[in-house]
Length: 388
Image (cartoon, rainbow, N blue to C red):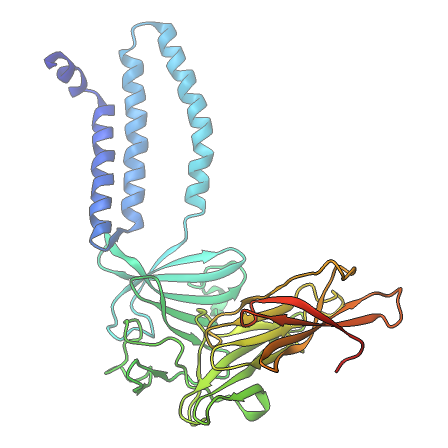
């Protein structure tokens, strides 16, 4: 044992392994404490590992007594290096740029932040709290979304400044606590969990990245002309679909909103991070009650509707999912298209569905489907000779 210890005592590779183990253990400890290394630590460690490997190889070659052994070691090193070098170069090239900023406009405490730019088909900057040159928080607290394109927004070339489209704030569980969309027709006021109205400009009370804020309660100032659908639940509670703006390819952005005070104030009900949903123009809406609602998304023009479909929400508009329309053997045509939206009749939930056959007259054949599970699944009921 003593001889073995003396043998590795002067082996550079031994100390390299010890350094790697210390680095891994330290990283696990600081991660458990809520911290993460800054890039300088990773770059320094990478440099130590590379130099350590080179020194270990040189030491091994010098210690080798046989010339053939030295040649074999050199050949192995060259082959391994030829394989690992491109991988290392790609890793370094794709590291997101790291920027330390004095503060973010939506942070009350004005602490320094470190931002990491993710830029490929879309550019976003992830912000973490900065502690010192060695450590930052491991929890992402803010994300700035700059939209499509790949660029570094901190590089202002020729005086041009990139504009942020949306900012999202996160808690330590990785959930969005507040969303501010700079292009939407909405108020930037927020409401806390106790229904107290707070302005982001109020630096005394405003702390949007805590768990005390409901992301969805963004008061709405949508005009009456932009209300696509509205349902009165009980005179006090109401649900509506509000148009926000049009986007490319015949699509629109809408938001499901709710009021609990008879329409004095409205707020979004979505659980999505961007606080709205995208639909195709001409889509239809209906809510059967406070929780169950449908969107008949008509799809893009010229595609026979395959990009659309009947979607259902069972939680008041927070989330939507596709319904399941069961195709009976008696209907020869493969594609089924929803006409309008579901409705209640004689205590049953029904929807009209049609098929298209250009070799028949009339081309469209209408059927009635019913649902026994509040709209999730639809089964054939009967043939309809005309639209009733």
